[in-house]
Image 1 (cartoon, rainbow over the protein chains, first blue to last red):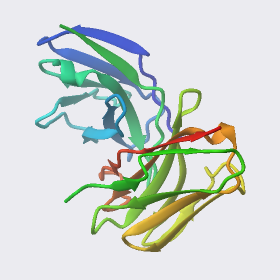
Image 2 (image 1 turned 120 degrees about the vertical axis):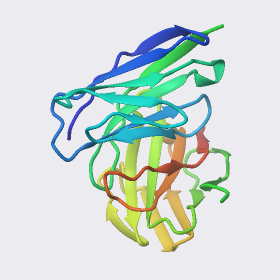
Image 3 (image 1 turned 180 degrees about the vertical axis):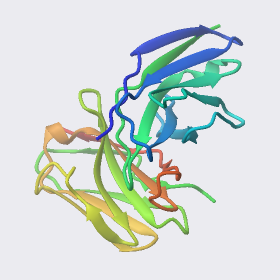
Image 4 (image 1 turned 180 degrees about the horizontal axis):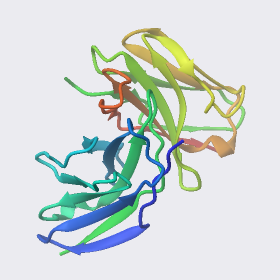
Length: 108
Length: 115
């Protein structure tokens, strides 16, 4: 199974951009990169996904390196509601393999 | 749509008792997943179904665990007999397809405590 590596924790000031990195050096050519987040006492929530090109949606942006061995989730203006654990996942058919994720703290 | 529905939200039981967790996936989704989350092991996939048929149950920890999906709108995860080490949050998720571009939608989870 393809693995991902993320920092255990990060901090950000409120209303500032946040860049959450993820390394996936063993990614295959057909693996999609998915990001989920889990707010306290809730189930994981889909954030964004991509294959090769950078992606934007209402929640975040996903920047994918040209060699696809790393990616960055970008929250353009962190709010207190963005405090969560963020998971970077390589999507294999039928399954997700969640790692330990990055715990994001947003400082008021 | 109401999203994925799980019941109960909290369950406290004594060791040795049977526990049944329930899940209603999003209508029209062909895939259903059961996960378990603990502090020690994080989020683990237990089993998943496609069109009500179990596809991969390699994550089910032991024979005390069983899962069924009698129809497209209902699934159960049963633990018999329960043990304290089964204490965890159990999540159900559904997906419209298994293709790698599709996301999963998670329910709110059932927090199980076995004393």
